[in-house]
Length: 207
Image (cartoon, rainbow, N blue to C red; front, side):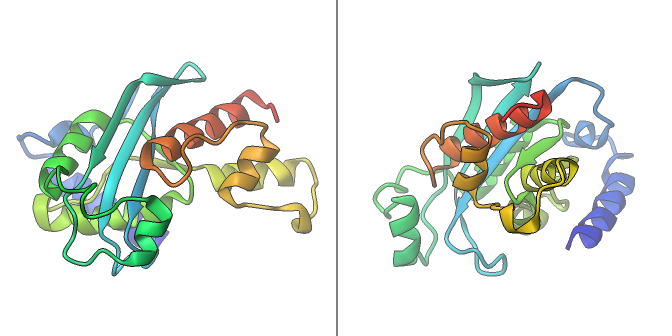
């Protein structure tokens, strides 16, 4: 999945990065010092079946999660809203009634992120679902460079010569081992903030 996405990102950069138009800046190399912690909540963990329910993003700058600079969007309810999804995210059809259409939500997300790198927990899943939704609408997937906090955490444990049996990689497990609070678990904004704090804590070398 990773290699295929990298190839498609490269192809998109050649195709869209050279065109004049609204999204050209997304394909330019990023030279700033900010990242964006990103999370989506979906109806399924199967990329092929998953529909986006909510999206959240928050800026990371100077080893701080800038909760004053955030994005939180609820999406219109999909035709199929599984009961299991409602139990996990507590988003009922009535809660999604005022949500945005997918295209409007993704447009807002692209405008918010720009060409900054994105940070996420098992970010490959979020990117695969976003790409699936974006390509039919815009012709390209999310072009941003990505950082996975799980991969960072694995490298952290390896550097400390810790055994595989101690590699607890669940969301709450990583937060606990890094000694950071979990905000609003299974909400897009709460998970985005917590993920941002995970990243900052590891970059500071704490926990």
